[in-house]
Image 1 (cartoon, rainbow, N blue to C red):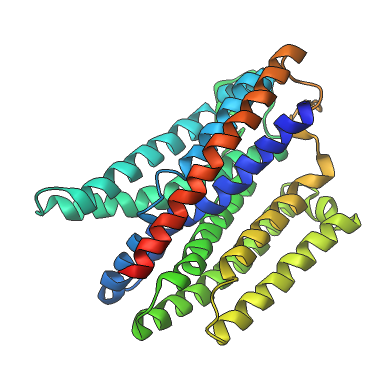
Image 2 (image 1 turned 135 degrees about the vertical axis):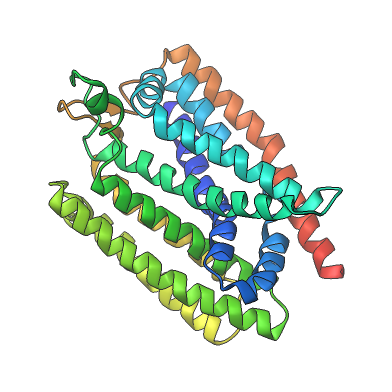
Length: 336
């Protein structure tokens, strides 16, 4: 049953990065758009994320519950040594959701709308940035339980050049996903041209920040290139992601946007596989040479069994209704 639990953990992480990433990217795309065109991107992004934006965070909640119940030592380590970026990330999620709601559904439109908009923009930017910092800390061996001062324990465990680079890469991925996901929602010719331009721009951002991650890893003595390219699975994952990029560009050129979302999601999965397969099932690499494993540092067997059955049975009820929700909004939009 442990493999069922691990499977649900990775599924929830992948879906949150893809769907939640596109959600965060909506605010980033608006932020990097020229002021004269923001009215168009605001409309497009609202139509893209408004129907299901709250449902995206369900995957984050599932991942947290799985870690808390099934892997308490891993959860405790992250909650202890990474509590600062975790709290800032959660604050960003709350601020962004609140700003989005008041921005579009406030009964009175006044100067507060400008404040809500700015909160929405910068919370959308900073939340995935801190998510990237957290992800980088788990593999960079900067979490050191043997450190003897506050800064080394709770600040420099996540605040370093590699973490900043991964944070920027995560931000660019979110903007890329939002741009790609919005293409199917765009009908007007002018708006479509704008979003295709944004898609091309964010592709460049992803490539540049990706190179920045490898550079930061090299100067931080993190063998990221060896982890990814030393075995066929890593090379295949990067190759598949590159091929998917070519297919997306071809679909955009031919104005056929049906497969672009699936291809973009596939790219994210390949990137996650390439970044994590080498040290799997170790999920946290500690600075003292120890590792926390998804197969060794687990809850008692009965707890894992109960959690596994709860996830299986819960998915039977939750997933069909979630897909129906997405389908119903898509169908309603098509009729309007």
